[in-house]
Each structure stands twice: as C-alpha cells, then as structure tokens.
Image 1 (cartoon, one colour):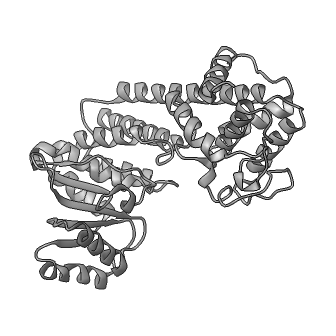
Image 2 (image 1 turned 120 degrees about the horizontal axis):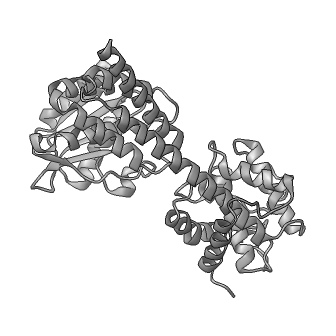
Image 3 (image 1 turned 90 degrees about the horizontal axis):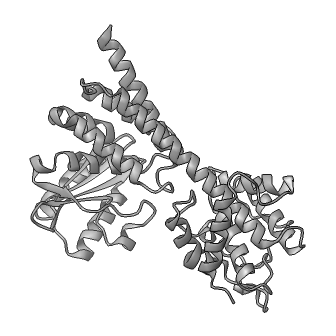
Length: 380
C-alpha cells in the first residue's frame, strides 16, 4: 500500500509536467475541477475533493463518497484525518492556493455522518461549488473518471492558479518599485490608502496588522516590540495570548500593552472578558487597548476609565481605528514610509485565509495608483 504522502508527490509531479495539457479529456469534468480549484469565495471545496480522492487512492476499497467514520462499515474513512495529516502539509509545501485549515470543520461539512451523494444538500455557499464536488465524487464512484486522474488534474489547476497569482504579485511589486518617487507619500495619503483598502470586504485582519506595523516601524524609538502575531482564526484562549497584538519592552518579555481589535462596537462584556483573561493568567499590563472600527459608546468608555484604580493601575481605553493611525503617523511623521513598508510586508506575509489574494493585490494596485497620482501632481 502506497503512503498518502507519496501518492500526493506522484500526483504533483504528474500535474507539474502537464501544465500546458489537461490530464482529463472530458470537458464537463475539467470545467468542474477548474471551478472548484479556483473559486475564491470558498476554498473548502477543493480540500474536500482532494482528501476524498487521496483516501480512495490510498485504500481503493473505500467509497470515495463516505468521508465520515460515523457512517460505519469497511468502506468509510475519516476525510478530516486525510485532510489534516496529509493535505495541509502538501499545500503548505507547494504554496498552493488553499485554506490552511481543514475543510471538515466548515459549517457545511462538520457534524455529518451521511454518504455524500448528489442529492445531499450541504447547505454551503456557493451551492454550485458543493454540487460540483458531489458530482465529481459520484463520477469517481461510478468509474466515469479515475481518482488518480482527477487528483492530478485538481493539483494541476492549483499549480496554474498559484503561478498566475505569483506572477501578478511580482508584476505589481515591480511596477510599484518603478513608480515610487523620491518624494514619499504624505501621512494623509497613507491614511486614505489604508482607509480605502479597509473599506473592502474581508478586511477584519487589517487593524491588527496596522497596529503591529506601527510598533515595528517605531520599535527603536519606543524601546518596545511586538510579539509574534497569533493566527487570525485562533481564539485567545487557544493561543494563550491576552489580545490580538501584544507589546513588550525590547529587552523584557513581559507584556506591557495588549491590543484587542473589534470590527464592531466595544461592549462592557468585552472589557469584562479582558479582565477575566488578566485574572486567570495573573498578568499585570500597563495598558489594555481596544481598537474599534465602529463608534465608541461613551458609557462604555467611562466604564473602561473607571477600572484604573480597581485594577491597581491598568489603563483600559477604547480607540477609534483610523484616529489611532492618523495620530500615530503625524506624531512619527518621519517614520511614515517605514510604517507603510512594514504594513505592506505584513499584508503580503499573511496566509490567504486571513488576507485573501485579491485583497493583497488590491492593496498593491491602490498604492501604485496613489504613488503615480502623487508623482503627476508633483510634476504639474
């Protein structure tokens, strides 16, 4: 019996040799594979498909449509195990455009114990994606297409998407480097750039990166540094962190300031939970700062202020996201370009599951356009 990792390696080599020529001749199947592999709205479908195909190739007697051991019987298997043990490492090794987490914890697939036949409604979005996956699994079960051909074709589409993505990024970065003038962007231009980018969909991670970049750019001036950022989807209780961004003194590991980002209004309950975290960890910080992209409730702000004496000297405060940035950039005006470079680096380094590829490309395009417009204004 061939090892699952070896199966994936073989499929990758085969796919990589056939980038110019589809492995599957059937047009309908090929289009379905491409749709699933390149769908930006939902990346769980391609991981579901690859996990099931890998299980089928590893153990030919299993039913490719039964990725749940709760189904019972010798032909069922744990799709989640194949996904987490093998697919995760495979996509990370080859930097393939997939989610970093298993597909089997998404709402459409968790807590299931039924055979994934074509008439099953997985209640996922877009529905057409899950319909396409179920169709392909049925085709494998009915011997319309082989599991090895389908896996290799899926990987082929992912490689092509990865290569195209990388080429777009290289082109955008190269164009940006060429358009950057000696005159740096003003603080207000940078604020406007980040505000417009933040206005796009799926940008809840950006305030975290904004605060982290602010400290990274001013690290030597402040004598403070940012600890490694936790995963976007991980809860503080899982990561052991106090907040989204933790700041320490450069020569001391003790957290002196903790930031917690909210893409909504901060409530009293948010502050109470922060107090509980501090109490459980028996940690004393100088500042516990909430950054919100919503309005600030004055009653909640007053409650935060009142905790200074009660906690023995911990400052709780709620700050508006863009106001924080505006004050920072004007206070550290000469570091504004450093901040922008740090912020861009953090955005590009984030996994696509927290900052999507379109968002990364949008930032680079928006910055390039702003740099070009600023240069034209200077020339005029």
